[in-house]
Length: 307
Image (cartoon, rainbow, N blue to C red; front, side, top):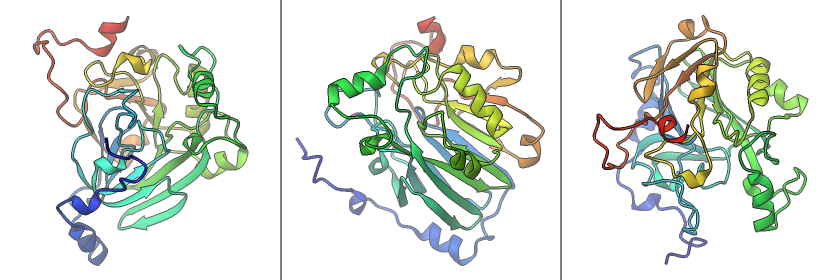
């Protein structure tokens, strides 16, 4: 078995190069083909954002736990080429940066980064440190009992730090929440401001946030568009994750759309006509999932299997 503590990154084994970044830094407007930002979903909390000038950013690629004791995923993360790979925190379902063929890695980045038509601000805070009221499992307490780790914010282990990423491009402010806690300090709320597109962990086991938390966050950030993530997908994520789908929560919203594709193009003017509108990728992900026995006519949705 590979020694996970000394294996290191494997970028040196990869083909490809960062010539796309050289072109962008040399002539940043040359690649502009559209005014929209493309957002694609890869399951769990993984999203790729492609700016109007073509700079691609993949946030929170996932993997199974290296111990082999906690296999959430039925396959590996796809071998994907991107300009920038980012991780919000050091948990296995968010930190698979070594799975990417990325020209640049910004792991748990705090502060500002700028390139071409993109500005990224990393805002340091904390992972959810206590399971929310109403959650299916008290997984925070369970983790603390098994690991012996303290989960208060003054002494938490590294995995319970979290960085929220505010990506500004194409006239949009896109916030990836990661697994952040709900009760932010006032100075952190001030740094976030208002957002156009909010990528928020939402599932009906209330694994990270419960329904009241979600409503308060959406209202506080004045989010125009809300995109759920960190939910159960029947042919990608094991039931041992304890996650549930987000379908019922979505359909309780006043304004929502179940997308029939794993990617959406967002125009800033169209986005700002909304307030709290939900775009739900459902079981759609931007790569080929494992093939199971069900035929296309028989394939259920995740919610069909749990309700």
